[in-house]
Amino acid sequence: MKLLILTKRSLISIGFCFLIGALAATVAITSTVKAVQTAAQPKENPIYRVESHDNRIAISFDAAWGDEQTEQLLDILDENNVKATFFLVGDWVDKYPDDVKEIAQRGHDIGNHSDTHPHLPQLSNESATKEIQCCNEKIEALTGHTPTLFRPPYGDYNNDLVKTVKSLGMYCIQWDVDSLDWKDPTPEQMCKTVLDKVTDGSIVLMHNGAKNTPAALPDIIKGIQDKGFEIVLIKDLIPEGEYYTDVQGEMHLSN
Image 1 (cartoon, rainbow, N blue to C red):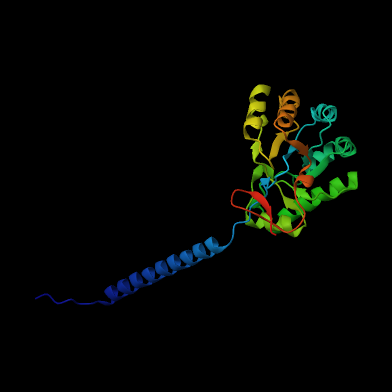
Image 2: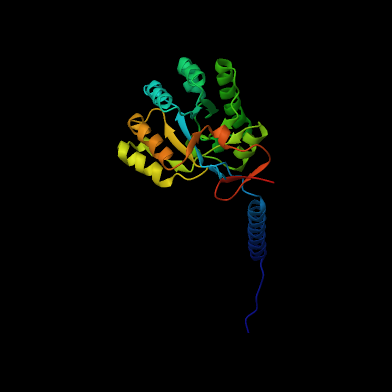
């Protein structure tokens, strides 16, 4: 019969193993608790589309870089008696103040697309707030209008960002119909992409600097109208009152 002899070194080793095991168990329990807490937090969704029964949709343009096509797009919208929502980056506002004024003077709405177009979820809440407020101030200085709509750069958001936008008295706006103009499809392809997906309450995404957007825009407008939809500003598509956004990103009035 063998006797188990515990030396001082053996006792230290056993104690160390117990300590490591206890630490591992603590980390596992803490991670589980955090995961449960995170899962329990309701997800904050931006507005991708609006519950509507009035056959209305909205067209929007993001402006973050050049302005070569802005005047042409404005002329096409005027020719078709259509108003759109332009989401402007603060840096773009700095570079093209005359375009900002022109967009507003022609009756289009101007939304906020951040000040420098960063990935906002990677920033602190304080920095994200500064990005939004700086852009608002620049637009207000040129137009006398403070934006009420905000679109996250790259469509990138998290719960904190949506809450921050709401705390500033603004709506966080995405889109449910992407024209994919930034991929430089042909005008025909772009038109088909939009018309196949647009439905009542849709928000269409386009860009002021995409190669074929001006060529596609007249047919997109005509096709939308031929389907029986009225094209309105996003701010007019959104109903007034308390609201919630479902898991699909559709905005509904709370009452």
